[in-house]
Length: 329
Image (cartoon, rainbow, N blue to C red; front, side):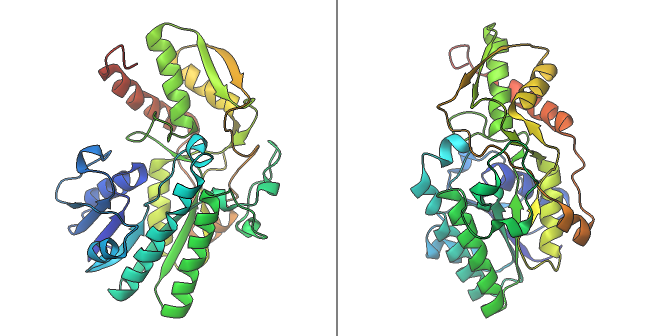
């Protein structure tokens, strides 16, 4: 895993940008980073990397990206937080073209390992109806009733990985990410996830001198959030492993959205009046990661407490927002 060309699809995004930077730090010399966005819109551009703007929904682009690569990381998808995926189901579904064409190209050019970033959105909605949710085991994805649009695309793409492995011998590995967060990512514009959105809202109130924050839903919905460094370590461990079926990669430190706001307020030194938008997208009522399998196979568990990861995320977003003009804030 430490030699040969590495392709990172979705390298202009949050997780992809961090992955490329981590691979560079670890000494990888031959990295091809690909994203749909123009290079100036990438969250991170690492030195010494072959950076390409390509639309990986197209087979020809996937073949250009994959040629010569021994390792393929597919982190590319049209996605965002609940505000995006609940209102853009067709766009989310079209990401199925990315994984399908990357698998075809990886097979054609005889890649040795293929990683697909799936999501906890594959899990059946009926198992996530209560904030006091039982942590989701890998088997809970079936009988299938995933998040409409985005979740169906991820579940279908998982099956494609399985069948390319079984039918064509391509060594595929799949991780189901649970709410990854951290600096150098989206925090506004509609695609941001809950930790970044809450940080932004608290910072906006602080910079504007106001004392209110709007929360989507009633604030009692529960989630677990995994810091980006833990995500990278788990991703690389899964890719290098012999784990054939999709496996959870997440934190099991469960909090309500209200508790998430409490933590960010504590970091900011603020206390805000909360208003609850019950008509806004809020996702399922409860979701948590059962990490028994990954601990059994790899001895992996997240090392970053939510409070610590949020502080790093908050400080980065605060610095970005301070750079803006008062009008933009």
